[in-house]
Length: 97
Ligand SMILES: [Zn+2]
Image: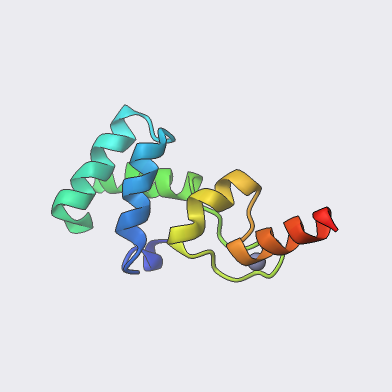
């Protein structure tokens, strides 16, 4: 996932992740530091904790269409079982027909 930390909506995702309550106190503290000072300011140990927290709270690709889930849709994807917005809408449509 690390290569995707540079995407512009990543910081917004980290911010939402902190607010979502999915991170424990330690992970949340490190995530806040990352937002304030940048990923490179973290120690190796902090990077390890942060990377693991992101890994645990992200979906690699949509289960239906296999695109990379944008960070801005990641929290939703975690809640809906691993689908991008588009597929989620499609599936809801099918269910409701
Ligand atoms: Zn999809």
